[in-house]
Amino acid sequence: MTIATVKAELLALEQERRRALVQEDYPRVAQLFADDLVYVHTTGLVQGKLAYLEYAKNAGEPQGYPAFFFLPSALSGVAA
Image (cartoon, rainbow, N blue to C red):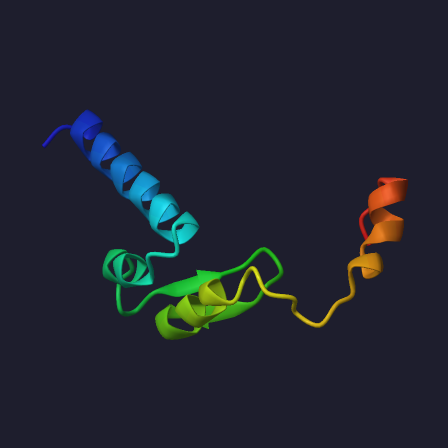
């Protein structure tokens, strides 16, 4: 197996992961992720596979922050 072949396979799997998340195909996401997955978010939140899948299912739902909470920093261009 060449490096190019491995790269192509990895990129195809990443594209499939993105598709599955966008289309909310959580059984497929579960197939793509290893059972011992450790997912670290940019916020520092660390989750295993099951916790991440639950998080992904609810990612589009409000998390308890009103929309205006983010408005001042968005208007100023400065991160909160």
